[in-house]
Image (cartoon, rainbow over all chains, first blue to last red; front, side, top):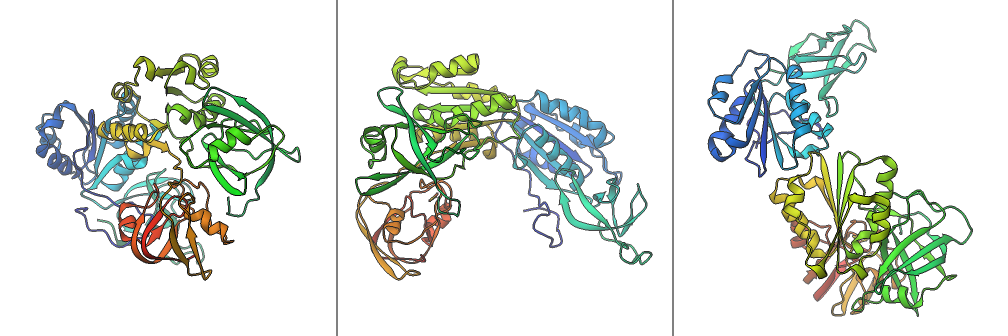
Amino acid sequence: MTKTEFEPAIPSRPSYGVLSPGIGSAHLFVADGEGADAVCDLLSAADGLKAASHIIYVPGANGCDKSTALQALGVAQFHRSPSFAAALPRLTKVLADAHMGLQIYTAGTEGLMAQVAAAAQAAGLPYEAVQMEHRGSLARRVQCVHCKGVTENVTLDPFQCSHCGLSLFVRDHFSRRLAAFQGVCIDAEDPGQIPASVERFK
Amino acid sequence: MSVGAPKIPVVVAEVVAVNDLIKRFRFVRRDGGAMPVFSGGAHVVVEMDDHGTRRMNPYSLMSHPADSAGFEISVRRDEAGRGGSLYMHNHVRVGMEMVLSQPVNLFPLDARAKKHLLIAGGIGITPFVAQMAQLQAMGGRFELHYSVRSPALGAYVDRLRDHYGPRVHVYHDEFGEKIDLATLLKSQPLGTHVYVCGPKGMIAWVHATARAMGWPDRAVHSEEFLAPPVGQAFEVQLAASGKSITVQPNQSLLEAIEAAGIEAPYLCRGGACGQCETDVLRCDGIIEHNDHWLTDDQKASNTKIMPCVSRFRGAALILDR
Ligand code: FES
């Protein structure tokens, strides 16, 4: 079972498990922030995988950087990227060169995991082929349904769209394709009637 | 099929002996109209009036999906079967009127795949003939590995080689040639999906090998139509229609329900699609679950039955039908 407690939500909201060693010819890990702990937990218990493992790591937006611990695992390849966007070309290349039998694991924030799953799907893998474990922040990656701009690390609800400036209510409705929750204008019916923001996602 | 869509009245336009065991049949509409569009992997249920016994067997469509003038199927003669294939071989002639169901696809290509690896055994080649035509038209990447008993029994080998050249790999049992599955699966680019159609053992072999090599289950597709197994006669009470019926040894439960004049849902008649799922109200005995649909837990609980292929032994079976 997931180590993070989630509030009850609509059935379409993604849920997460605990990473476990898969059977395969190669192992690719993509993690951010505290997700590093999930990777360390798995690989410390599965020494045999290390020689065929590749870790791509992005330090958390909250400053959490566990690069040293990951590097100390002694995997075949370790790569640290300042952001997921910076890591994406590498991830895409790794997927393009890989063969069936590659196991994919992702851990950390929901936004990161969903973007890894989307990249794997774009490479032809089924959604279920990616193992996911939530660790760390519950801050959300949110798409404004009006201007389509994506705001990362949303903790407040409602929040102001960083692109068009509308006040958005953050729904549990999640798009796998966009790897983002959906934010809708909260004062469309009564312009100006905007409730006070609360910190819903820590 | 019984879920609303009208059946297709056809006439047999062509019967071709492909080899000693396989005949190909082409059907066109009696009214000269166009056939419905289908996608590679689809099947139709062919209705036969075998001297008073109604037989309904599913066969994969193997004509070009873009050919709306007619549908083609290939039937392998099964001496030990319940008689459907023998009826097709011995009695169906050009000009005969028959009835087909609408096409239904339980074995479609996954359009998200980067590459399609097709593995066929014997008559299992038929859905792939249509799928390859479709992939060719779409510019899809594919490879066929086709295992046959001998050159004489290698149905459509020449035609497929002509069309698709080096993408077609043929293996002859007679010469001890065997698909090197482990090497094949290991060397596939990420995003490949594998499809298998053939004998039970081959399907299980591909699933087990792929799983052991780390292929996701959802990237492994198979189709196996089960012929309804024969067994001992048994009694069933149909609660909703207030009837008691006897299922004969060589009749399926679904056929017995239909023979009693009761409408029951179905699509594949081969334990694969789930359409015929029926609630069990009481079961004093053992249900012989022969389907690929119910989960092991559902089977063990004896609360559901798939009447197209499953049978019963015991004192009383009451169904919600
Ligand atoms: S009709 Fe398809 S499972 Fe019974």
